[in-house]
Length: 152
Image 1 (cartoon, rainbow, N blue to C red):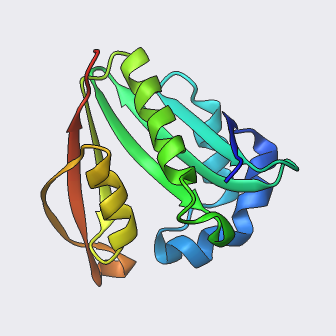
Image 2 (cartoon, rainbow, N blue to C red):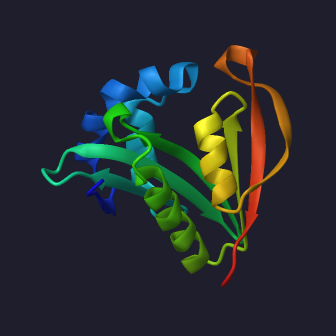
């Protein structure tokens, strides 16, 4: 899919909100949460994927503190899934984490989100363990994953 990865702007928040609850359920973020995240450029880095007409295809964010990165969110609109958009955004987040001095990256992913787990595994993340009841009001476990970052 023809997508351009750009720095996430406040205007992207309005575009992503119609998808947020459907995609993330009880873990959905509010507009205010996204706005606060975008303001913190010292420890946060957010990107958006835009299509040829500027339409939002996806969004993602990472937090970097000291030598550790934590991928906070990755979302892709349904029509853009399985097109490489998520991979391109994750690659951008990890490259920025390395630029900021991170030596390792972590994330949590729903145990039942097989597509995301496959993506992260193909990106070099390894499974560390489970966080019981992490998602959906305690009903769904999370897999914790880690990747050593090269070049830091």
